[in-house]
Structures are given as structure tokens and as C-alpha cells.
Length: 610
Image: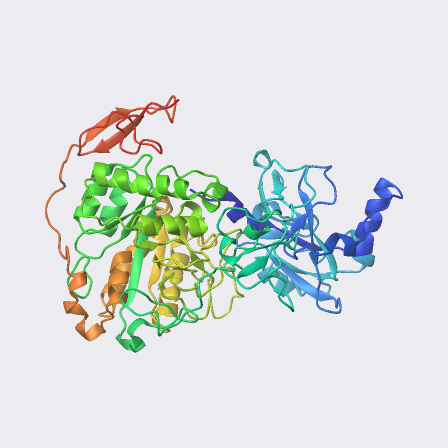
């Protein structure tokens, strides 16, 4: 499933507007009222916050404050449409290439629409335009920049992104509500030792800040709780205190465990899949993990499956586990509201993740305690509450936090100390406190077609979110370039994270992945492993020369045999939580009374509630 708002962010067009022009036009439309100046509109407003100038219209037009340097010096703000789109010079927006009829046009014909009537891009050569008609520069000055959502969409002022018009319910809001912030930094102490100041000057105990319970009268103690601002945040990495096998950290996240030389570090590659396991994708998994492809130690290559509950065939999950693959949880309900995950309570995360594990253990008969990993739907991290739940429920690792594309990739780390990179993503809720949990960080993939020539593009975490990858050749280049990025630097594990539907959408994608796997297996320094196997190696760093006898990777080395049952029970079930739906639960185990769901994960039935 694609997270629409995230994909649509790239369709934004930033247009430079003359401040006086914008304010004057507004006054001409509305009369000689006391209109706020740009300085008043932008006072104390974050530069990345979009807001409206009117609630009239179709909810598509928003603005944000922008200052092009300390002295307001004019600059070029380049806009590049996503790959596959082109810039319509007349309509001043990105559109599908087939819809754009003016790629031979250097500038907009109606000069009156420009600030001061000047031309834009007159020095742009036709040859350059032909090569790069998906992007044009625009001169902007210090002031307000306007954003227009594509047709059919509206701007969600709370989420700060475009979304389908029917989903946006705040078109009557002019701007995002501001929260009162505590007073944490002052020249002189304003509170007694051990206490901090609320936004209203009230002093409360430091420990009460960022505990999800407002204690200040203005509730400001819960409004500055990021990784950087939480007064009770985890300390910076201290390698003298953080010692393997239980703890691993480094200042920037790039240090190799065990101080092993890079040429003696195995290049680990993790192939993971998110979502339900069923008849739609079982054949794909059998094609990739056919039992014949072996790592240099003679053991079959492995994958990690983050399983969501609805539509999953648990007899297939049971067989994946039997064959040595890792089974982890991807939630029980997979609700499509990102805020549900970002702002979820401890009990929400407990019901979703511990409940999903209980279902796997019961109906896939995975009873060896090996379900120890979590991935949040839509990669929407749940902050400290998620990780408190994970520690209490003995989950070992999370695999939801993403790291921005950097020169050197980041190794997994434990969260006893502060995470070594920025909390990446829009409105993410990364954990700020100390937690006894491993973070299997998702390094962004570099998706440029030609990294030696192309300008930088935003990275992507799931392979199928690399929107410019449209052909098998592009996919092959993506795999090899990112392998080289990891292999030729610190050999941090390379994560290839998929939704099965993307790999099944084109035969050439599957063929290129298998070709890449077999090419890597011809080497003696590359291993396709599970998330748990990465942690096992990091807890006991072992050089390549001794890795063939690394016992932690020998378990279920070469699995043979047949599935536990060839004809699973196809249990037609209902639940009061999903009225009107009859769902089939495929399992080798006995059928439950009800379809397992959030309040009844075992399917035994509800307890009486008043």
C-alpha cells in the first residue's frame, strides 16, 4: 500500500512571488482594510510551515515564509519535477509529460504574470532545455512563496502536505495551531535546581517534562519533546559505557563494530517484505528463496517478513519460519491513518504489535520465541510509547526509523544512547529517551540513474518508493550502485525493503533482483541474512576469514522437507469488530471461534462488557 501524502509531496511547485505584488493584489480584491504585513504574517513562524491567506477558494493555495539570505539577496530557487513529469511553462506547474505541449517554450508568454514584468530564464539554451525540461529556475526575493496543490487535491494545514480533497477537513483554518513552548534556555536560572520553567513561567520538576501527561497549566511541558529538545533525552553516545554485546553506539553512526577493518567485514544484505503473506505472493518468495541459493558458508539465503494480519495465510507463514526465514510483526490492523501510529498510546502499540505476535504464535505455530522484531505501518514511528511497550514485551528490535542519505551509511544501533542521526521524515515521532532496544535503521537508497552526473535526488527507503525506477535496467543500476556505496565505505548492512506487489508488477524487476542475488553470491564476502542475524554478528563481530564457522549463522542452515500441512484449514470467520465481513483464516491449527482482531487476538470471543 502506498502512503499517498508522502508520494504527493514531490508534486509541490514553489513559485517566487513579489511581496508587494501579493499584498497589493489581495488588498485590491478585498478593499482598503487593515491587512497584515508580510513581517507580521511571518513573525515567529517556522520557515517550513505552510498557511493560507484566505479560507475562500478551493483550499489548494497556501503560502510559506522564505528569506533568501540574511540581506534578502535575490537568488535562484530551482524547481525540478519528478522523473516522468515535465514543467508546463504556461500553467507553472508539474504535469504528466504527455499533457505538456510547450517544452519548446523558454518562458511564459504573458509577461504580466511575472514580478515586475521581467523575463525568466532567457539565457536558458534550447539544448539544455531539451535535456532537462522537467525543471526550470525561478528568481525569488525574500518574502512569501506560494504553493499550489495539483488539481483534485487540497492542502492539509495540519499535516502540511497535499492530500485528496475529500480527506482534508481543515479548509476553514488559516494556519497550523501553535503550541506554547516551555522556557528551557535562559541566561540566568529562573527555577530552583531540578526544576524547569513552563511557558507561563511556572516551575515544575524536570522529570515531569515529556511524560505524555501535561503538568504545566499551559501544557507546554509536552510541547518540546523531540530527540533534540526533550529535557530528559537519552545522553550522547559514550563508547566507554556502551559495550557489546548489549549496547552499540557511535557518534555519527558509521563506526564498524569490533573495530574490524572494512575489508574483513562481511557485506550483509537484508531482504525484507512488508504486509500479508498469502496466495498473491507465496510464489514470489519461493522463486527468490528457492533453497538452491547459498551464502559463502553453505547456508541458504534468508529473508525477514514483517507480517500484517488481515488476509495472511498462517500456514504459509509457518512454512517460511520452518525454512529459516525470520517472522516479525507489521501490526494487527494496519490502520491507514498515520496519526494513529505517530500519536498512538502505549496500549495502542501493545494491542497492535503484541497482539499480532500472539496471532502468529498461535495460528502459525511459531512457539520458539523468535518473533522479536517490529516495523511500524507507513514507517510511522510511535515515539517513546512504542519503545516502552517493546521493552516491556521483550521485542528486541525495531526496523522503522529511517536515516537520511549520507556519504557513509549508518550501522544499526541500540537506543540506550541518543540516536546518531536526525529524525528523518515529515512529522515523525522518534524516541527521545533511553530504551533497551536495537534500531535496525533503514538507510536511504540513492536512486539517481547516473550518480556521477545526475544532481542529487531525495533518497528512498522502500525500494518501491523509488518512484523514478520504471525499468529493469534502472532497478539493476539502483541495486549495484547502492551495494557499492556500502561495500566501498564501512560495509554497513544494505537493506532492500519491498512490498511484494511491486516485485510482481513487472517480470523484469524479479529477474533483475535474482540476477543481482546470484551475482553477489559468486563473491565470498557477501551474505544475505535476516535482521536477527545482523544483530548476532554485531554482538560478536567476526572477520570474514572465520565467518564460515560462525555458529550463530549455522542454525537451520540447509532446510529440507515438506510443509507441516498441505491442506490448511480455511476457517470462515466473523468478528463484531468488523461487522458485515466474513474473512477466511488459513491455518494448520484448529479454527478459532471468531476472526482474531484487536480486542480479541486469540479469536476465543469477547468478554462481557457493559
